[in-house]
Image (cartoon, rainbow, N blue to C red):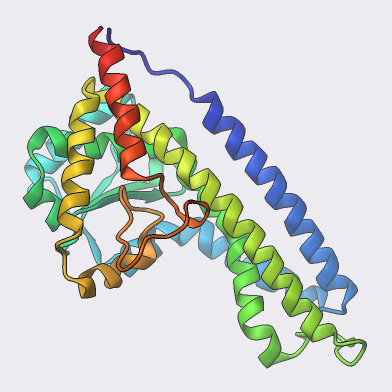
Length: 295
């Protein structure tokens, strides 16, 4: 039985809840910095600058950091054809298409909204997957665009980025214009609170990231009508990943949150710190969907 696209209320609720919690943490953080004498002018300029950069240029920064290049329809006709067809099924405006020259078999979507989205694939994934498997992966990435979870992740990660930079540089640059650095170890306290804020936002963002991957898997299964194609692609990508040189994996490891499967080298990491659910859990859910759709 073919499923119809339905709004993922679970994802919507989690995005709203995560943003609410992060906003509360963010307001506390700003109030704390203000109390300890941080210049309000500095805060406005610092926060405004990074928020604008992260929101309006996040897609360009991601493309630049991964070495992705926008390709025209004449340069990649088959890839464009697949995305055009999937967008018609998903009722989405067609995003820009990019290719990353990398042996790591992966794909990602970025952009602040549906009209400013980019879907990128690596040369590794183009070489390794069948057309049906590649379509399933592209449908997964397009579901991220349709669910608008990329924009939420971009905004949500801002507070984490702010706390990270303060955590990293506050001990070097003093109290950034404040007048309380000599009172009771204010600088050290600001650093400790920055660490705490970064950890809280880190965990919240990763919890949301794991759920949105499940949501994108469900969306891909509905768009293609074949959950087994995505399950096959995940198995193939996971198997190939173990044979990719560790140097190549490390070169893209910072982009794990964007990829369909994280490029992790070395030992496994705890679920709470992972941006993605395990491949085994994702495949199990897809197999269950396949059974339901063929019943």
